[in-house]
Image 1 (cartoon, rainbow, N blue to C red):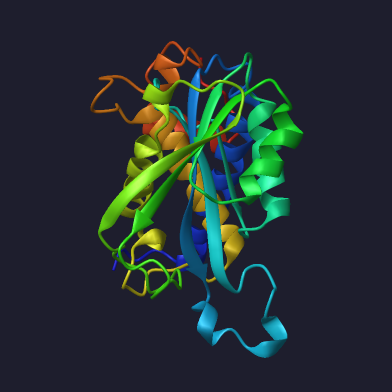
Image 2: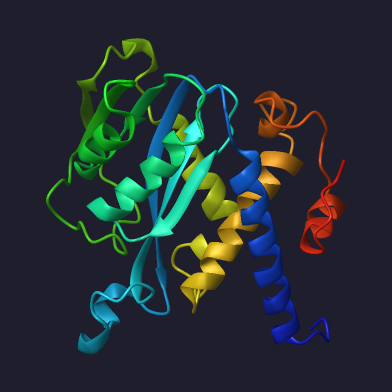
Length: 255
């Protein structure tokens, strides 16, 4: 429609993804976050999990793919994310990366996914206040495949569980992480449900996520904050533009 080669567009995505991921990897350091919420969002690559052939079962990049995301409840900054499987090894890699970006003790809240417990213990030890928020749904135990659970059942209640330290009960929440999941589904077509908009290569999904978070953290004004999360968190003192993002592709770091 735009008389542009799809290969050219894809190469631009790859270049932009590498540039955005590299910049944020270096810039999002020594962060003074106080309360972080962690969650995972489901997508799929190439084909639904039920269609993955036997010889590709368990091969990352075929079927279910999860994006692990951490968000600061105060500044709304996303300091760390990981496109990976949903297992203990990936949980450890994600949490270790997050821990290495923080300057002080934090309070963490996750859902009830058990792999977080060991991952957070290994990465933070006793230097964390950690709680789980475990929600209970009316249809729990049925229709639980990720690709078919488009609308969770009615939430019958929740319970909190202190895992480490002394988390403030008033701030045990995953609301901002869940809202970030909605933002990702609305702003990245690859995450849109019930459409043919999915990634054929997991590497391209990783690049799209890196570009998304670069725009989210540095360019787009947050509606509640009236500024960008990066400014609010003290990572930068200026509002970035899309042109600044493009300059990153050529190795230029905007002043």
